[in-house]
Image 1 (spheres, rainbow over the protein chains, first blue to last red):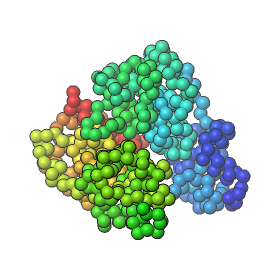
Image 2 (image 1 turned 180 degrees about the horizontal axis):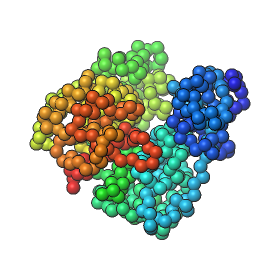
Image 3 (image 1 turned 180 degrees about the vertical axis):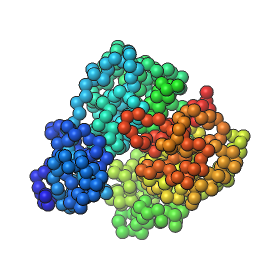
Image 4 (image 1 turned 90 degrees about the vertical axis):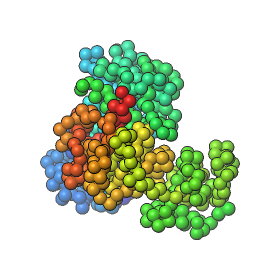
Length: 263
Length: 263
């Protein structure tokens, strides 16, 4: 059992929680809690830490999986230090990062009517995680993020994905515009949510392969990105509202596409 | 200029930021930033605090309004103490709380096809604020919250309303069930977002006065509350998603009602 706050492992895990650079260097990320442990693909788990006071209870909630994997016991004090949450559940894992392939994501877009979301410079970890969660719910085929988007492996993002990060393919790309063009050439229609859009979003037909393009919370899409889209679409707003929350805008569009595909 | 961290006003404002009880006792709440200041109804502002280093710049962004109101200058150190944000914009106001009237909100529901959202025990301040923002965007007539819902005047909630808290009527009620019945008697159809719903949400007609009932993030709606609804409606979800984020679920339903009303 690890009981010292100065233990090397403790320092490493804390650094992995706090620093994107460390995560990328080691090619892992940190997840916390019972749900994130239970849903983690077993072959990606490369470390499990359990707090002493939680151990007994965890055997009841995640018995078999916990028994099959080896885990390291740590004192409650050490766990509190490793944990990023206010009320830790006493289980924390290291998971190997995903390396999804854009080419694979874009296969069969003519036959399979896929659904994508492209995020430019989203900054709020909770928003990004919520987009993952909604994307899985509508059966989306992938999320494409600009390099300046908040780190998907940020603990706050991970938490708000509620496990969808394990299941929705995603890629981070240096430059969005060429990717949009690549998608269009393969047969994906790309719609940019934009205040300058003249046509309301529900007027378009999203039953073929579709991607929605969502901009940064404060500034929206960059002009050169929006210019690449097949069309600018407008989510109507009343009152004095200048914009919707980015996760809400994404969800309204994704659910409209999903609705059309079910009708 | 206030320069002492021990100043009585500083302590009062800090307490108002941190404690719901203090806010309710004094019948005020705290807002921060240029946008929240500029959109605040002037007659409700009962205190403005400006940080020394921000004063000059603020005269450029909110000149006339700032000039018309008297404000108190505080040192940067004092402002940092009063502020709830990591990167304060140097302006903070006290606003008198709202006391909206449910009876007024429910007037003319037969003639005017109003739209409401009823929240039971929502716990995340960001979710609540986001619901306000979306509610304004779809022209909703009001938000009804159970008493156990997170405080609307929590600084995090206020921030994520992006000003909609000033414009969307809301009430907090001790017991939701009798309010649902009252709404139904007046002619509002109440639909509960529920995993046990057998019919997808888009199958219903929301063009008459409608209320959507949304439950707590972790537990959903209480049985006795869901039982009051005219119908349980289901937001379909694929993959392993157990539920949507509460603000996303609210937004999908509100935008579907808004879409139907525009078609």
